[in-house]
Image 1 (spheres, one colour):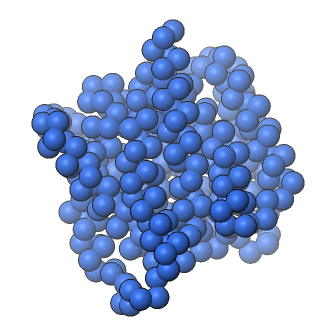
Image 2 (cartoon, helix red, strand yellow):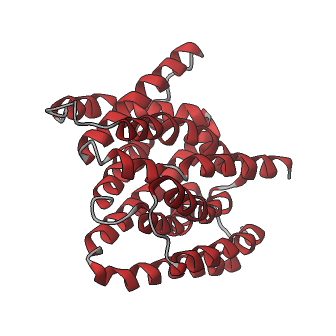
Length: 286
């Protein structure tokens, strides 16, 4: 019970960090291209992660861990950041944040496929209700020229759920911060080449908000958040703690409104409230 409580607490801290990711990305793409932003944040985080691994003299992962680490890198180091950055060129951060409500279902499914977890049937009911609420909202808005952004966000959610579940499974053996650090190191050669090849031609036109956004997604979204998140998933269970992601839209919408001045429609608030109510039921039956 104590391990489970610690897992939920650690997972909540991770969600609070992740809640600022989409607003920060929205600001950053105002000064950087999506491809450079994705690669630059990965390179910065990888250098920090490598420094931690060296400082604590962590042993190298086993050869059998290489493929899972590549999957983590594809899901959360490359796939999710790039696809969300592309999506935010078509939709607002507030609209994109609502899609985060699909992440618990995606994470739970991959938790069953990759982590061997078996939640109770009632758990799936609460998870699916939350996911359908988000999907229905997205479909109702897609006719307003945001279909491309919606599809990019759905693809991002699938890859992110896979990366979360795979990383959580590895965290049981390697530790939370070690997993994301090694995944970043694995992706570093490719991401460094992309970063260099997509350097901005002119740096003077990049504003301070874009730099702040890049700093946030590099240090917090790409590294610090995962320290808490993977630990939470490993201790409390992938499917169960993963439902905390239903709270992320709530925090994210507030940040988008406060930081970016983006309008938050009452329908967004209603959908977010509904999926948040699903957390209690999903937690009980996880």
